[in-house]
Amino acid sequence: MIKLFRAAALCAALAQPAQAADLIQFWDTPQKGGNSFNAEPPDADYFEALADTGATWVRLAFSKWPGARRDFLIGSAGAYTGLEKADLETLRQVLDAAHGAGLKVVVVPLSLPGSRWSQQNDSQFDDRLWSDTAFADQAIQFWKDLADALKDHPAIAAYNLLNEPAPEKPTGLVENGRTADLQAWQTSHSGTPRDLPWLYERMIGAIREVDPVTPVMVDSGYYANPRALAAWPKKLTDERVLYAFHMYEPYAATSSPNMKRDTPLRYPGVVTDYDGKGLTWTAHDVAAHIGKAYEWADRAGVPSNRIVAAEFGCMRRWQDCGAYLTDVMDALDKHNGHWAFYSFREDVWEGMDYELPQDFPPGRFYWLMEEGKAAKLPRNGQLMELLKARMAN
Image 1: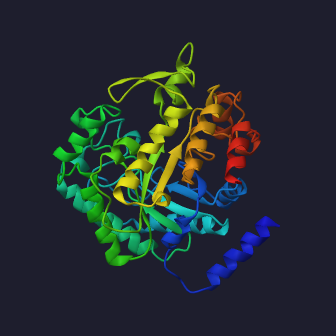
Image 2: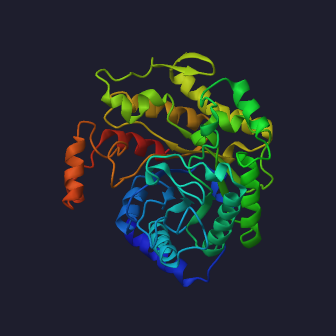
Image 3: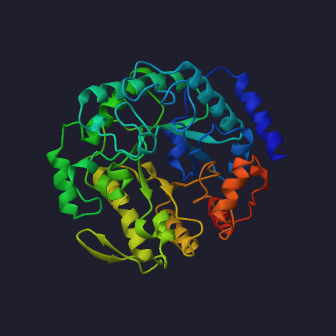
């Protein structure tokens, strides 16, 4: 019955004249969803399955998909000259499939001109965007072109300008160092290519020349760390901006390297360097780290419903993952926050696929995927049940 309703809704929508992309009002109430970072363009069944979890939106990364040239849609991150038409058509078809499932979409590139995603760049950090204004000009043109191409698609809920920018990385700044150091760094790089607000202002200005209404989502610096956002001196000029952060702290415990330890770090209780001292992480500290984004919003005059936890997660096989996810969602729900878990049915990595049982062997996942037997994967993981329950609230 649900699928029939969605199909009828899609037919009705397609029968109507093209309309402007979804307005900022979509984000006035809490929206919960998932991230799609697949290597192949997702199909209708994929989006139907995500919608069945209770998700209302999907953060869709397209940069892994095979394209006409090296960098999907961009052509070449070394010299952008225009959107690749065949890639754009692929993206539109995927957006159609998401719309048919009743999901809103936030599109996000992993690469921009001058900033190729390190996993597609021989594991090297691409610093050109952050050191050469010529690449900033190309990135701005890319977003103006893409907004012009997508502005009338009914699935679009926001343009997320770049996933996890890190202009700070090559400069020696410690990611979770002292607050005073983060603030001093932002001040010292104001008006330079490493100044994210400066770049975002220019990008948004170009987008507004062709699309005055679609919301824009901006990741904070240093891989979307909320503390980097808290170092921004003020909000951006445009009022249709969503400010995004990602939540994986304490990263030493939540990430894949922890699973390779003889004795993985535990949560709560793991100790990491934070703000110039050692921090023993508990639910209180998770909430405090997330709270940096909301505290900044209050100071900057940004409504709390314009803050988005665009990614959060932990390794599904980590024994403390359920407790960690619960504490993150508790903290976000106290702010009536928007969020999207990472990730849903990623096709080349099982590490954060919460539908898989925690004891399901990674090797079995890769074998089934290579054999084209993804349908045989067990989808009864308790971590996904935990997420579903929270999306239903």
